[in-house]
Length: 487
Image (cartoon, rainbow, N blue to C red; front, side, top):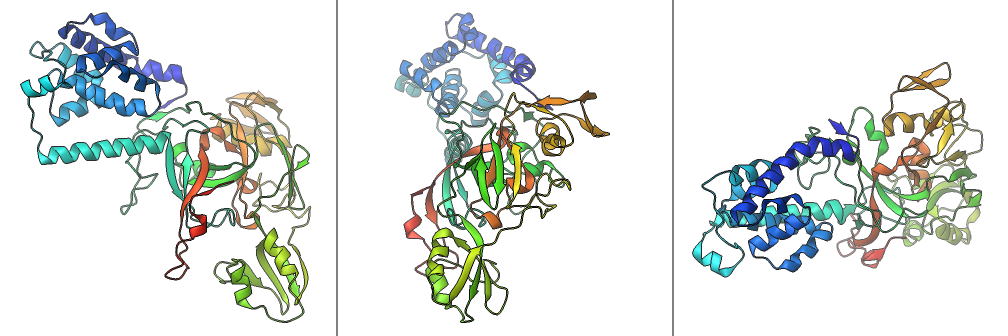
């Protein structure tokens, strides 16, 4: 069941809210408070704080994202202790099923208000000795809840598994990704196993349930995605078979944002143009170069000194003739190699314009695009209306159908959207264009198109650890990369 917006969510939750408030009303009355205080949001939380004996200033925590959830759980537990509910299952029930147990306890004549549970006097009058197992359970549950909230709404650690961002980011880099910069996305599939993304470790089954699927909602952040930001997002193509995963359970990818909503993007001879202006290339980005020598073999150590992996399995160093090579290089390394005495020719390998590649977006024969010569096209923006014709339909059909949830059919070159012929379409979401810095070794927007805003996870901040699996015993850690900012 998918709830498309706030109204739908509220409508579904209304009976549960009524039950919660009704129970709170009766519990307040048992404590000598007017029941109507339960009707006022925020104020009712303040009353719970007072009844539990916590300082009044704790109401400040209510307005701080993430912390308010952690403190809120603690206040609810303190609150039900006031009514003699000390057992573990009662605390869990109060937090998770308040709409069931607040009314049960509120209308139960044997349930009495015993006093402020957070005070020393209360603890002396109503001692409750926790077992060692209970102490461990409380500690573990608190740690899991706190870590889950931090991962969902504040900060999450990621590892770079592939070379698509080399040499800006390396395989084995461990980095922190901020959820707050662009605003944390509210979990869309809330029923999930803690610390697992989409697949359970060892057993390999799904780590989530689709029993409840919420629509896309995002808490406001303090900045918008800008061109050149390094962004983590969910891989859009996992909406398709065989994965068919919900948005927030699709694989996490990391790329550089090249174009933002409303931009016009064009790639000419491997140079990216955004709105007609040449886009600055990543400082440590890579591209394959053709190298011709005088026939003298290279010294492998010279390449290693430049940080170039010549392992044939990696594929960054290829010998294609007696004196010809194809090597994946940064511009800095290319300039250095150009000065070597045995190098006669070196230049980037660029696919010619007009040599179409079927694997390139929009995967349509009428577009003779390849990874080095592409576009132009406009990145969809929320509220932008596109005229639908034989040129635009192949480019925007997937966004209209898959990402924006419309039923789309194509009939004689015309789109039929939700059963009605359409000559135009107004987008509901913003979209982004993402590319890897390792331009010839990156599966990115050039191959599968736009990234919708609801797929955005967060902004990459810094590398906190970097591990070189091929390094020697004392060279496993790349010390120079520790706590390196990501730009």
